[in-house]
Each structure stands twice: as structure tokens, then as C-alpha cells.
Length: 212
Ligand SMILES: C[S@@+](CC[C@H](N)C(=O)[O-])C[C@H]1O[C@@H](n2cnc3c(N)ncnc32)[C@H](O)[C@@H]1O
Image (cartoon, rainbow, N blue to C red; front, top):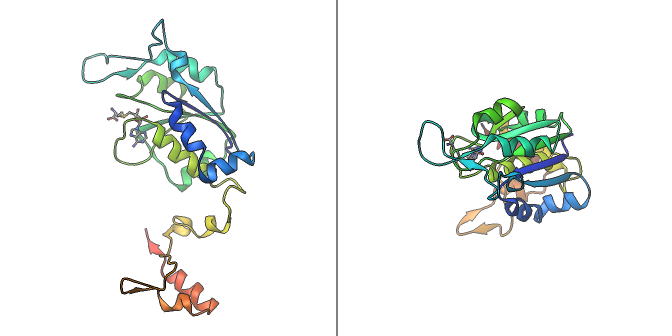
């Protein structure tokens, strides 16, 4: 099970905030996983701790230099190095299961125009995209990936049954769910859910799983 993580980022505070919330914080306090944060700036070059430079061949923006990343990665040895990048493999349940066959991972967050390709060529075991759109940095994609990984660790969810019934299990989306009140703005909860008939409720839930 993948339960030892190191996030390499220029924005450690984004990761720290997330670590303090919800099931992620609870699972951490229960020692279900280990996590460290590596500030890429600590591996920056020269007096100004430089981590980026202009792209060869011209063009907009800056590129994360290979050397600071190389030093950050080699100083934090893990079983796998995972680069977050829009051109990576789309994250899905089978990729999450595959990642869980390893024990420890570096999750490497890009910024600006992305990574000098040579750092990917040197160190990449996985390149992961969280969707066909671009965000400004790899932190949210890394947190997205981490959260998907951590909630699969036994004991992380309050109710482990949730894992068995949620979307993407059995190739379907989850069924709709309702809570009180029974009627809200003329919209009623399906009567079968109020019937107390256990078998009918199970059948309704099964029949209302949506196709992917
Ligand atoms: C502004 S993006 C770089 C975009 C790059 N120039 C391109 O067009 O592919 C900066 C960083 O955000 C992260 N990022 C942005 N979108 C992502 C996505 N869909 N999946 C994973 N990482 C993403 C990557 O780490 C990337 O290096």
C-alpha cells in the first residue's frame, strides 16, 4: 500500500492547509500514512535560490530548472517519482490501484510553463494528469491524487462501506442520495426510500446507478 508520501513544491503552505482538514488529518493522526513536504526553494541555485529560468528557443513564461529538482528528488529517495503534468496519464481508479502497489512516492509539482523535460527523462516513473484542462500549478493535482490514494487506505474512511458503493466501483456512478426533509420546494424523496422495505431499497439503489 502506498502510504509514505513526499510532496516537492514551491508552495508548501498549500499542502499544509490541506493536511489539517477532514479525513486526511484524522488518518494522519491515526498514523495511517506518513507525509513530508520538500520546499523546492531550499534546493534553489545561488544567492537568490533560483529554481526557474527562461525557455530555450524563446516563448512566454519560465521553466523549472532541472538541477534544483534533481537535487530535491535525489535527496528524498522514494520507490516512485510521480510528476503532475497536463500531458500525463489521466488519473482513474485503475491508476490509483497501480500506485498502491508501491510503498513510497515523491509527488512533484510543476509551476509556470512546467518542468525542464530532462528532469522527467531522468526521474519519471509516472506522469499524471487530473483532467484535460490546465491549472497554474501541480499542488492541486497532487492533493487530488493524494486524497484519492489516502481514502483507499483501510481505516481512513469512517465508514469503509462507502468505498464499496461509491462512483466508479463496478463501472457505474453512484445512485442519487437524499436527506431530510422529505419534501423540499415541491420535490419529494422517492417513496421507496421511506418505505422501510430493505430489499426494495437495495433494488432501487442498484437500478439507479448511472452508466459512465
Ligand atoms: C501552467 S501549468 C504548465 C502548462 C504547460 N505549459 C502546458 O501547456 O502543458 C504548470 C504546472 O501545473 C501542473 N498542472 C497543470 N494542469 C495540470 C493537470 N491537468 N494535471 C496535472 N498537473 C497539472 C503541472 O505540474 C504543470 O507543470
